[in-house]
Image 1 (cartoon, rainbow, N blue to C red):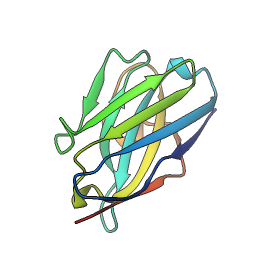
Image 2 (cartoon, helix red, strand yellow):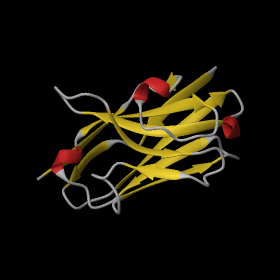
Image 3 (cartoon, rainbow, N blue to C red):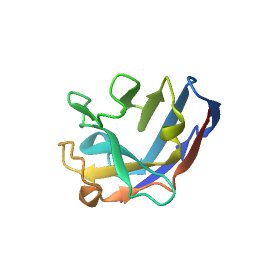
Length: 124
């Protein structure tokens, strides 16, 4: 079992930055791949970014490439999402997720554990 707790969401103006954190507990953190997803009202949950066990592989949705950066600190059992140049269309609830195995995948069905989500609102 892995327990995940997100933090760092909030209200920011367009062009601003936020850093989301996801603290994990339970299973050995370094043995799970991690991902960030988001869900806006009336829309399906979508992949944002993913990172493999030791950070060697990172993947991003096209909509956030060049603006968002995913990273992890296995010593702190924490994964981060640095979000820069935020746009109103980035407004959503952001979820942290963990999956067994090393590979990064974009399908939310592949993830085994989820956090409760944190709201990110970008005003224009």
